[in-house]
Length: 394
Image 1 (tube, rainbow, N blue to C red):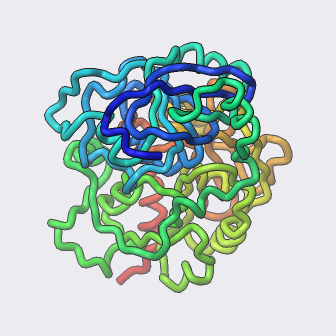
Image 2: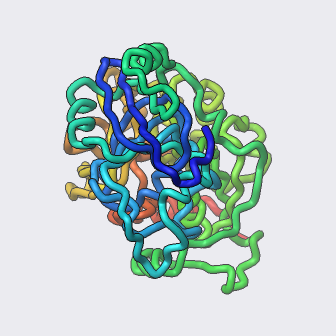
Image 3: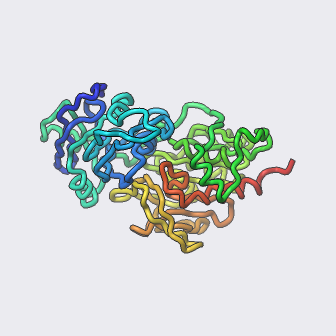
């Protein structure tokens, strides 16, 4: 792909079923392949653009006006971008927000993201809902329909591929960044926030080791702001190497693609369960379940958006959640060691599990939810209570 210098060009999106959508380029130009999916969020497009979980995917936004509040350096969830492409109905000509540092088109071009605007996204989403998520080709270079469809049919599927290796960090690092002031105020209503200004010695803090499979940065911000020392390690780190770090607890992050090929993660997690408290989110939920003997399957078109309803089996309350995943844990032959704690109300798929004997639990959605909603922040507090109980007394 190349930087378009914000000069829009004719562009097309072709799906493997033969459907072709015409529009104009937005951001970078060139040609990319990816699985075409949709997200139902009305806000949070910058968080979506910087979420590594979208690696290998062309994301379509269902909300028609995108770019109206611009972009900024605060809402970034990961350095750079990982998604294959970005499809919208309209780019807002005016971006207005006190935090805005520039327009969406410039941000896409600067990060070498190829976008498509001016297409009927309602028709595209209805197509995906009917047929299922499909491979597609987004191009400004080849505008021949037959050629593009042939390329889409030949594009590799996400199933069976290890996309985590494309987005996980190359080395271990300490995390010291905290929540932004607005989120910290929200969290402080139900939990104690510990800031760097409190001068708490790191050696006195519970130590959380995060296995990074493509983690959104708002997750370690939550963990740090609750008073923990946070170490981030690549997702392929062995259980032995993690335990050498003497963690109080282990966090399993979100990430892209199919969880079943990640056998290195299954093995590590299996060897961690029962030794320290474990908490997983999204891909981490699937990996924890696989490590316990469960199976996963590919959803028809996935769950992606900030308005996904989840039923908490224990409290019988409904949480509105942010989700981004194309695979789910299978109800069939769920191992006896796991109990279902949450269910997705749209299709009754498993949205959360807990280990019956060990201190380990996970959810299929994003309780850190940048840009929101914040219904599920309590899960971080639940993990914090496990950390406190596991922390050796000084």
